[in-house]
Image (cartoon, rainbow, N blue to C red):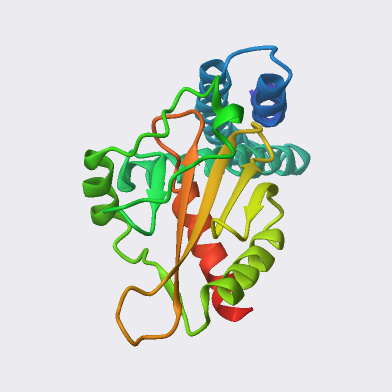
Amino acid sequence: MKTKLTRIGSALAWVALIVALLCGLTELVAGPGYRMSWWSFGTGIVMIRWAASIALGAAVIGLIAALLAGYVGARRNVRTGLVALVAGLAVATPPVIMWSRVQQLPRIHDVTTDTDNPPAFVAVLPLRQDARNPVQYQASTAVEQRRGYPDLAAVVLPLPPAQAFARAESAARTMGWDIVAASPQNLRIEATDTSLMFGFKDDVVIRVAALSDVGTPGSRIDVRSLSRVGGSDFGVNAKRIRTYLAKLASS
């Protein structure tokens, strides 16, 4: 009986470990496969979702195998089961965390520091011809953004527009974006940011304007970040704007 249980525990531990590793590989290739047009964006997301779910199951099986091995005194199988447990949790945790975040974030893909008069895209428009998301800003998006990201606001610098523009451009170039246009005459900067895994392209526009208050020297800098695809941006656009504004404030 003990020998049989040992064999069962060993089989369960190795199956759980192999499945967990295969799930991890699936998550790793989901994005690059989409970038190389092997499958659609939706398929890539489904691959990650199923890989995370199955990896959780593998983690449970690994735990059961480790407990069973411990019961029969098979130390090697205990280690294998625990490795399967850790591997399964490591594969499943990032997608689970991302999914839980999505439930708490507004389902928008267009974020700006000025919801009343968002900066307009000009230079990137030819690059967005095949984009699923339009550049027209929606009033409903403003409502969702105020609810989800109430902290986002323009930055005011005690500098004339020309100097503020130079500082804004310098900060933009440190972000690693592809600068599409930087126009000192129009006080506007446009850029594209590409995600690492899926290669998603989000467009950014930065607008510099003199303060409208009479007698108040300084410039106001607004930013807008818009995804080309996807109904929800997983909070990426808001994070991108926060990071840029922090660089701008500290530069």
